[in-house]
Structures are given as structure tokens and as C-alpha cells.
Length: 109
Image (cartoon, rainbow, N blue to C red; front, side):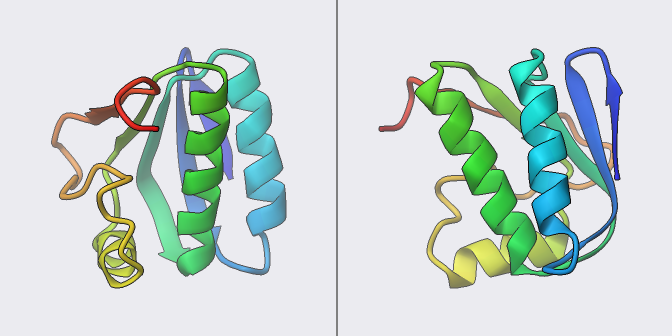
């Protein structure tokens, strides 16, 4: 589900209500070990639980005053975040091949 390359983790495969708890905990472990970038280019299927996981990781990073970068947000995730009115909390418009957008822990409270 998650593989790591240095300070970047790649979330892959499906992220749905059926497995989000394990994805969330695995991601938290990597974030606590120094990961500062989350790449979603390998997500194959998702529902709103992925958005909940990203917001939780972002909250955790901010509470530690760390930056967290999100890259390659799936179009479906961007749509859900707009519908829920939280698109301003996550970088939007990332597609495979683009550079990542940065969300700083100190930029929003």
C-alpha cells in the first residue's frame, strides 16, 4: 500500500473505507520517521476516506510544525475535496508528471 523513497512516500493501490485504517497508521509511522512528501500517483481506487487520511496526516504534521507536501492528487480526490469545501486545505490540480505543491505547517492555522 505504501512504499518509501527517502523522505517521500508513495501511496498505492486502493484506498477505501475497507483499508483506510491500515493505510492511515502505516503513513503515520512513515511521517514520524521523517517523510515530508506524499505522492498519490499510484492510487488505483479511492473514496472519501483517502481525503480523511490526508487531512489527518496534514494535521499531524502541522502539530509538529513540519511541512508536508502532496503530489499527484487524483482527479476524484480533487472533486471530493471541492464538494466538501476543504479544497483550500490541500494542494489541488496535481496530475502525474507535475511537480508537487507544498503546504507549510506555518502557513495555515
